[in-house]
Length: 213
Image (cartoon, rainbow, N blue to C red):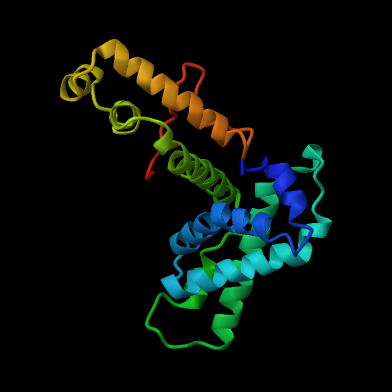
């Protein structure tokens, strides 16, 4: 089944019995929330717990999400839920410390700014990276290994085209064509999740858009 667009997927989440929608949503967003939680200082188990808190929060609040683009993007709404859940989580930990020897909860709380514009920008960037990882996992089997490697080594690892062409037994022109084909397919997949393709006008991957694929 082809993934739905983000807007239609989110609207489907209002039906808590739509297991396919929730499975797809968690598959896309759980790694994103987890990575942010870890970067904010949570240990692995705590980050997993926070993910569960966030998705329970989404389930309880999704009816109030306004799909009007003028009201803001869904990921901004999700970021606010995640940040609120992080604060709530840290407050609970401060009241009931488990003595794990980690960075103190108070320190983590004090490190959170009142208005986290940097955090929201980081969340948006992580979403872009997650969207490309999600897309790359799904399109790789559509290409031969040489085509994928031509894209991967020149578009992600930034190796010289001529060098990669020699190793793969391809002409430089064939490498450019292979890279362009994969990028076009990735763009199609990413646009099913977000209006931000992460590709520039020349068809190249933005720095960081494919980072850590």
